[in-house]
Image (cartoon, rainbow, N blue to C red; front, side):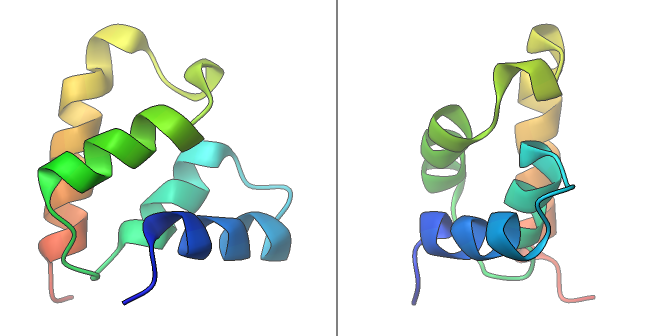
Amino acid sequence: MKSIKEYYDKFIKKHPEWGSFLCFAEAVKHRKYNRRKISYWFNKLVDKCDYIRKEKKQLIDYLVDLSNSND
């Protein structure tokens, strides 16, 4: 399994016009990553200007759900 960073780098390269949050969401989508791994890489890769700090927990909840969804 590739790391989140490898998928993230692929999306950043393919879609430079996308923001870091959108690329991160695509990187974790349907890949079954756990909350700990998503949180760690979220803090490393997503630009702090791309989200409101007080909404961070909800965003990570969303990303965990997105990662574990089958649609």
